[in-house]
Image (cartoon, rainbow, N blue to C red; front, side, top):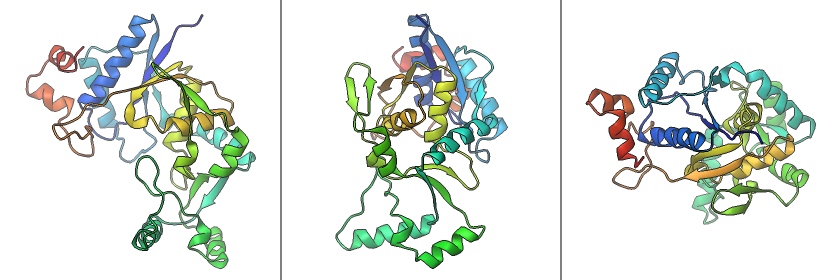
Length: 285
């Protein structure tokens, strides 16, 4: 029987905070307790915000915590061609289309719907579902954009994709058993953009398969996204990992910690004299 393989996969678009430390240590401890392997992946498909300096800082913080991982570290920015092959397979199935609406157009349409006492459907993260080009653009406008150099997103045709995958989509959640997947709740998710050759949803399932990840242990904020990941794994004939979604580290108001909110980083804690042992104690390790 092969050893379990765990991974920690942060995005270096800001400095790590206690929430990242908790998830990283959990995966490292799980690997040790099961005589498994622990891998690190750098999710840097956003090559503008994920700077080399932030990557160096992240690795330094993780080493300071006392973590050790297998090398080489997988950097997503070095594997765009692999995501392109997966996208090509989906395109060949007829489940990918070019979406032309801008964020401003979507926002304006959704605001009009909400104002008319017909609130537009949102995904589990609260973002409005893609309304479809035909609701806003005429055929002539769509053709003009298709022929131009305008920005676009490549989206998954969720209706077609779920029909191909069948109704029995599920995943195995630790301590809870079989969970019925509901990818349709996300609408036509983005798989790539004109200026970004992949998305989180696409790259994460490709990476987990290529790295042989057997156990995905991550935060509860990604629980519902597992439905989309199981759909893509099924369409692309990729292996299904075991899933476990752990509790999040929250601030005093009950909000989850976030880099975008400028929550106290591990580097700040280090500067203030906090030790790795104190971090582990604070996180109940």
